[in-house]
Length: 391
Image (cartoon, rainbow, N blue to C red; front, side, top):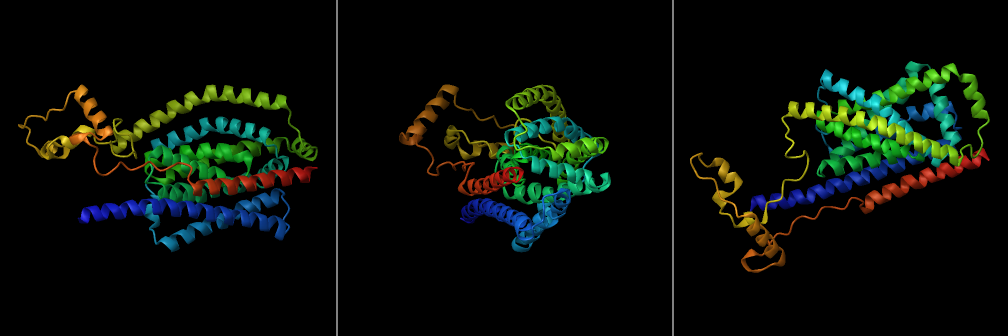
């Protein structure tokens, strides 16, 4: 009786945890939007390179404050949520190599996004944020700070809130939330893809430090390349920034970007796949995983005929049975099919169990749809507002 009661309480806790995670994400999203709107309209801070850098420093408040509120409200232990475990040198090498190989892919996705949703004001602000500071300070602002705070928030708190889901769904949900928090169409899509990959990196290393390394390497390499290019061609960049028009992109540019994306994907996806498979294989051996049971997936469903096998012949009982006992016999395949068919139709002694199987929860829940609507609405507002500024 105690076991049944505990099971019921567990089933009530899991949806509650997921629900509160969604509410936490929505609250943090609204807080981030409020800060950005107040800085732009209430305090009239212009969207210049200095503003961009200041906004990046504000990430300490944008994500740091919700993180603090979360632990004060839930009384959770940070070490249990974040999982700071040592990462081997070989894993760091794999992660940095993955970041290097993934940069052309994410860059191509971002370029297509910028062509579909052109926003020169945002692009110039991001470019100026890199060139306005020395490389070491740009790395701290654009690479180190997001790698720490965003990983604590998304691969820490948000991922832990969805840990009752299978790995694929968990990664997809965290990736969607990560993309939405960028609040502009130029970054939403490739950020979501990177967010999914970082959940897998976290899972196979069992450490948030690993996803931090990947995040820092991705942003750091991008910032370093951009800084070097901007420094060598500062005059050209400044002139180009002054001559930006409302619609500098043509259909030909979009077609060219899509073709370039296809070429980059054809070249780099196989390289990323081979590297990722080696990374996963190494960590499966290190952690003692097996390929037969995918990680973080629900327990295999008990076959229908198993309910008619005597208790002493069940797998748990067989494990405790001496080796001399003869192995239990299973019904032939044809009989299994008959049993399954009869069970599904509710016939006689082969009727289905009294407890129906648990329904898989929907991916796009009302709360997730709410978060998407909020983020997309603000991104649309930014897109329209910046277009009006240009005109």
